[in-house]
Structure formats: C-alpha cells, structure tokens
Length: 183
Image 1 (cartoon, rainbow, N blue to C red):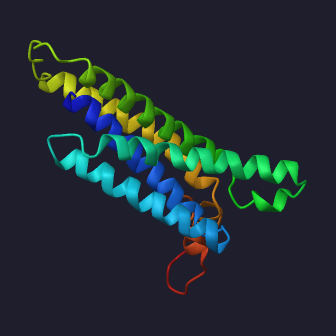
Image 2: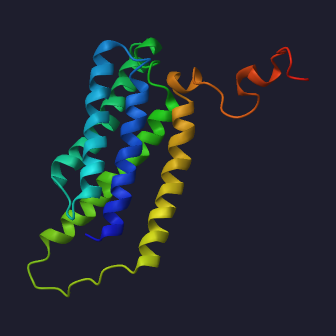
Image 3: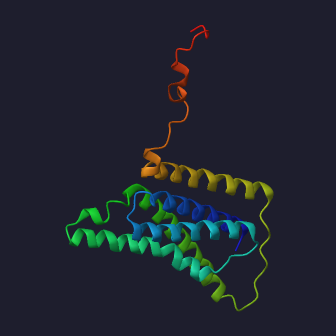
C-alpha cells in the first residue's frame, strides 16, 4: 500500500473519530460509551498508520470502520419500526452521514488492498515511492477534503452548537465601553 493511500486512510479515520467523539455529549450513556470506543479506536488507528510505515490490523480496522455504520443503521431502523424517534434522535443525521462516508471509504480501501494482497502470489514489480510533489499534493487534498467534511459535521453536533463564535466582535469584547479608551 502506498504512503499516499495510508495517509488518506489515516485522515479519514481521524475525521470519523473526531466526529464520533463529538457526538458523545448528546448521546445516552450506552450509545455514548460505544461512540467513545469507536472514536478513540479510530483516532488511535489513524495516528498509528500515519506514524508507522505499514497498515496495522487491516481486517480488524475494516470491521471497526463498518461497525458504527451498521449500528447506526440498526438503531435508525429500530426507531422507525417502533415509531420511537427519540431512540435515534441523539445521533444527528449530518455528522453520522459524514462519519459513515469516512467509514465506508476506509472499509472500501482496505477491501481493495486486502484483495490485491491475497492475489499477489506471483512476484510483482515494487512500486516506486511517490515524488515529494505528488505526496504533498495528495496530503493537502486529503486535508482539504477531510477538513471540509469534518468541520460542518462537528458544527452540526451539540458540541458544535454550543461552541463559541470565532472572529467577529470577540463575543462583544470590542463593544465594551471602557473609560479612557477613547471610543
């Protein structure tokens, strides 16, 4: 697996992990514990494959990437069948969809990699490492994509809805009427 592919997998895992951890705040205890475990596992796996020169536990990572998607689907179907939307209401739609997209991307890339490795009994040519420009371009693109998807997902969580505004008037500090400031 190329270093570019590992970087993309790492970014996607970190993005999904951060989203899952942000959803813990608004979740009931049982769901919050599961989201915490998924989020921490995704973060640790993402950081480790970025730091190491190899893919770590690909089959377990594949199952771990699909588990939140399957559990969210099961929870949503159960809530619909029981006409009890409060069961799944703590898991907001936008963050869960984006985390699910990251999970499906990870599972798909790992499936392709594992399939290639299983059919590689005959020796193949060693792939040339990516040039610095190609690698940096891929990492920058991954950062833009993951950041562009993760930011609105985090803003759609309860943690994002109570976050302080950035920019503007600094929460009203600039509008304070202080003696001697000459406003």
